[in-house]
Image (cartoon, rainbow, N blue to C red):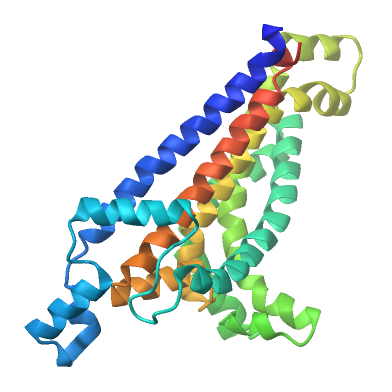
Length: 320
């Protein structure tokens, strides 16, 4: 009976750890944003700021209360799904993020749709023909891409495809109102290409390492000695047991989208959550900054937790 409960207990512990981590992150996010320089009331009032007007605005926004009290109020609202109200627009933060979240999810989904199959194919085939010229070429290309930051890839893409060749538009805002599928692909081509290059490089390396580690195990070598082909050895013996490490590799690589999308949305003027967060920093819109930051952190923790759960459930020893 205990054997059947073991995966459930491990998954429950992993989810509990994720929630605890998210609580600690929310504490750090709130107080880190509270330490941003400048007075939000004076920034919003601008030249019309007077001591009396600034004090009244602080009281209206509740920023004159102690930090601990404001954190409890913010966290309670967060648990209820209330992200607060924007200081600048007066709109609910959830409504402002909801308009942009679909755009960011669309960009991330298209990137994953391109990066994941390509990365798995290149990582698995490089492991199958380890040491060959094909493996060396794939490894050299991935190492080169890892060493190049996102903004450099985006800048080079704009110079080559938008300025010199004039094949693609430099800005991607028009992709949201494209008239045809071909036009939409043109608008999304450079942002997706930039993110896919960075994400795929890490995923290919980690997938290759996970498959090679499984191939070197005794039971896979025994299958090869019994006459199994290299393709069958990898696909039927090594790959199922490397599913856990590959899931972790995919989660870690896709988590780089959370950092890379901020740079890409800014360079290509893409109206996503990351662009919204950067604009809110300029106006010191604290509720919007906190909500966007906690959204990115929660997405990262969710990806890592899902990868760990897949690794737990894919472990043959826990299924027996």
